[in-house]
Image (cartoon, rainbow, N blue to C red; front, top):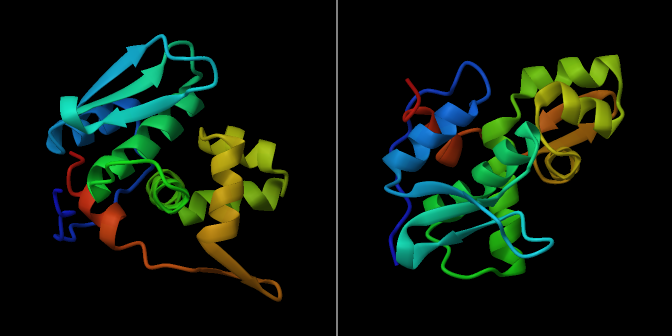
Length: 160
């Protein structure tokens, strides 16, 4: 089992594009493959092949969200799907794709998760996960639950 990387470069200025995610995959020594997958399967990481597969026909937001989720599995060296590994991958994907300032700006326009997902080019499920696991509301204030360090800083260092 490969240990996660530990360096902590600077944060990205903006949320990664698909090209950025492809560069991240390359830096993690995996390749991205669009494929026809089983019904209901949006993506998966195959460690033995060093490949991340994502379903043919996904929207841009779905591609970003699925690829970021699967790259989180790569980064954490998850070798099987467990509830804990899936939650961890969702959290890391949300931290990578959702900039707190952009989230706050979108939420000021409308607190609706669909609106926020569309504004941020992520899935509604990722917005819900971000709300539940990455931020905390105390009164009228919102705080990050975790430092945007570990994963996001490492991945950000892979961006140009």
